[in-house]
Length: 478
Image (cartoon, rainbow, N blue to C red; front, side, top):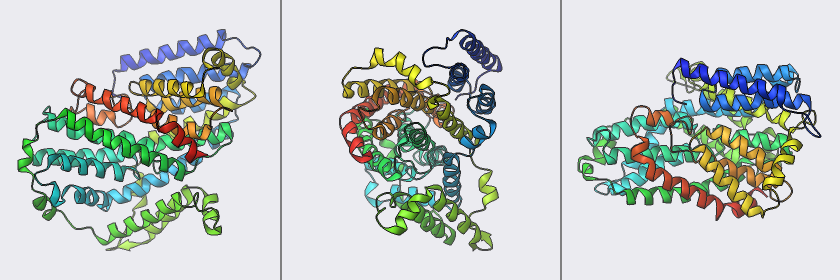
């Protein structure tokens, strides 16, 4: 969320407070909605507004405190369901491993390998394809805020090497492509990414269903591959001036890079083992050892890996300096993930009556239509909303609407994946996703210079979600 003046933030807080009080005193209870449910709604809707307009930092802490006061959950239940959620531990574990990969130079070496192949010399679009592909492949296993910071630095270096200035079309294309890849990995891979893990937790809490990492990753990989082709097509139609590539010498760049050290090799192999233990057990559960690992969940292998990397020393230093790595974690994102997870409990609780109450409101308006049409409408509205507002808030809202409208007529596990991916196609504005201000804020790109390309990217995301996506998600999740 972009920075705003204290006056504007105060105005948003007052609006949220007024809305909360109006809901608290004037929203009627009824056949389904209980007084506890009224208090939860009077908390949730203003909080959604604050998350969209201000920040998700102190507002999350306020939301947790106020949730206790509603009576929907005890204090211990709130703390256990938020900061004690498996989502929080999973995200923290993978973020620490990502820090290790960054600090040992693994990420830079992988990116360098892609952009220094001899065949890219004199072929600017092949260079762009290889560069964006490296961002996409690395990002499938790396937290996207960290990925954005790393790749913005790499892109700035490439721009200097090519003697590009801000505002030039090729400069804009480089940073836009990196941003597109960043939003794709954030929704297409559950490994180390908050968005999919929050939805997986909501599905388990509210529907009693589970989506495996392997199913989400399989769908996300296919979707990301199709969107990568769309990216390159849009960029080719964009047709920026690529004459600056006469300055590009891959051999010179490769010769100037430092080799990957022993610590980097150890970190790479350890992380690869963790990824395999996250993806394979759900597919090979018939074998006892994989069945056991599957029961552990996805955080346990990562936690073991962290301890192993902390114990292994290279040149009298641990491969992973855990205290130093912890200081690099994006704590607001972690707390936000936990806060969102715990709100699933009062939403589905019989003590609040919120779910049947929402059903009584939504089903007459949106129910009774063909399932495919309902899916198309929900996906289209999610992609529209997420390009102007928070992607995480969008996925939570539309997941709960879909749960009411589609349960019993479509696989909710498949819908979980579909709405998670659709709500991640957030590219148009600085407020669409957490890393967006890093691209828009310093002027690497602007809304004016990218709106046509971003519109094409978002529309392609909708088409690919609907046409092959609905049946593919159902097959993989089923």
